[in-house]
Image 1 (tube, rainbow, N blue to C red):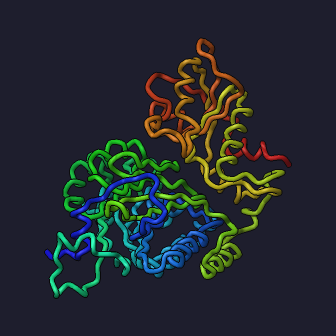
Image 2 (cartoon, helix red, strand yellow; image 1 turned 135 degrees about the vertical axis):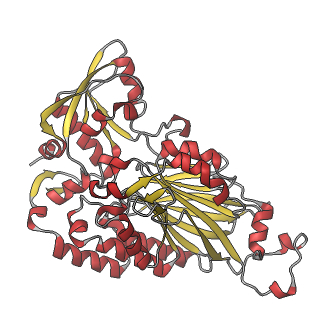
Image 3 (spheres, one colour; image 1 turned 90 degrees about the vertical axis):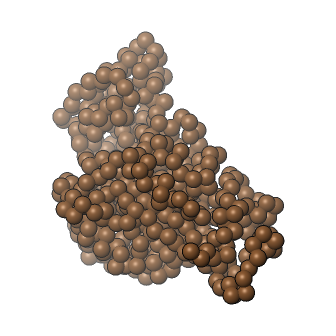
Length: 478
């Protein structure tokens, strides 16, 4: 097997990790990363615009795009009626600009079965991976487990650091150098998170079991290993020890945002709803000649430069597919609430409506923010993704303190304090051990208490007169 010169250098010198690179360390490659977009059209064209900006700002540096699952959202009426036309146009726009890879998430088969979705995405020029999602009808994966991205190295890359150890043959002297990234994809096996109609076609291997069986061989000898996981943080904790030193590990599914770079791998989540994008830069140290990853997370503003063609398509699609019932006004807000603030507003509405001391709701229940002024049904559905009955339990203060320690975790939460849940909580006041408290939550958490609240018996009773979307709509000032 013949290795390009740069690939040999990478294998020889390895990948080192640093959290804060020197500003003059050269950038050898850029990955623009997102996940859990969920048809967030307010900033879809801006994400493509970010790719354009990075290509302009770093001439000659190879750029690739990674999308770590959940591009589509069934609850978005425009996305559903258009069959994801905007998302497929985004894929095509990205593929025209840079190599683009999609790792399958549980929301990929929102509008078509998973096999058809994979075929449609591939038709846009995007590569699809996802090794532990098996088609029950064929017994084969819906997409390959891995792919190799061969990116042209920047032409100005110096070779003097390596000349003494690797004498180049004349026949290779003018051959183009390439960075070879080995990408492996895996997804969640929680069948209940997939659309009900496609569940019979899915055979989902446990991602940790699958990783133990397959990652060693898939990443053996990889010069630049990259893992794309839509399995969630709990599974990732068990998988991380399996990956080689220097791996870039992309996480998703929990709608978390974090960067953890002080282990043998750089591990990060990019948030959700196109609110942020991650920029992973492969750099080479001027001091040591070693390569390392550095991850920056940038907020995507609605006013940021956007791809005009995609922006025009979004406008046209809304004009056609946003119906009068979607534009019905359900409430009013004095000021706009960004996604995190809107989620807290909704959780507090649950607490007050249930007459509870504490309310706790999973963060993935929520999506976009809420606008100032009239709030339409479409905007409310974009903020509160799922509906359901509110449940209430009585919990002692000591246990509740433990549960609340799992809640309201942001980018600055220490990694060792993360257990995998992404919960949003609001309280009426201090929680004291020895007292009991009424806690309100949604049906999903009430029916899966040990998964979210930890071990120990909890009994939740339904409040059938309270439903999440109606409660939040009722809290909007009219």
